[in-house]
Figure 1 (tube, rainbow, N blue to C red):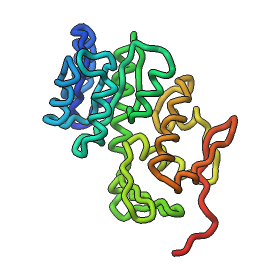
Figure 2 (figure 1 turned 180 degrees about the vertical axis):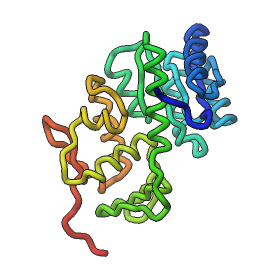
Figure 3 (figure 1 turned 135 degrees about the vertical axis):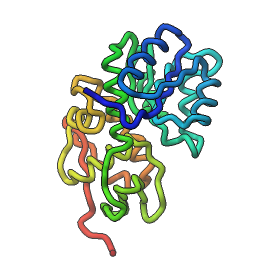
Figure 4 (figure 1 turned 60 degrees about the vertical axis):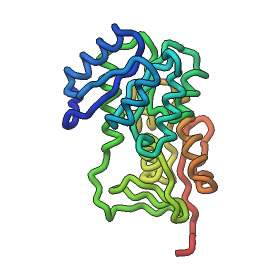
Length: 238
């Protein structure tokens, strides 16, 4: 059973009181400190004020959509690393892809199981706080430097801003460099999700990761029909 770490704060954002009450009850029961908001404007203010570890964010909100809230969270320096779990009543793939492309860490479609939501929240927060590495633990892969202790990535010495999920994805590929990682396997490892969840989630995060890494993103190869592999150049000047 998933146990909340030190009462981490979760912000639940939805304009349907019944859903807010249901989600808040189950999260509080699991040990999280829960706050709520019923609009996009309230959500932005709460994120800036409370700095939650994670936001459960409905996409259909009055006045400001969940997409717009997500964009503001990711664009603001103090909040860009806050994890986001999307809730959506839309089952169409383009809606989910759009949220993932904006930097959401995961998504759930309505109706959903409250127990699954709690498990997803726990999985995301474990990714955020994963490690236990010391500040001296680093991986140097071509132009890419991964500092495991600081959860920081640099390309040619320049820091790159990654979400917790993007960091875990890159680290997983880096630790298994040269070997093909299937999409289903990445879902289980990075997202701690059952392999029957849409593998498009992996594709969108790889696409965002490549874009952020710039030219170094070419090191992440697509192996058609299988998944992805991180290829490290054979030689690079010290």
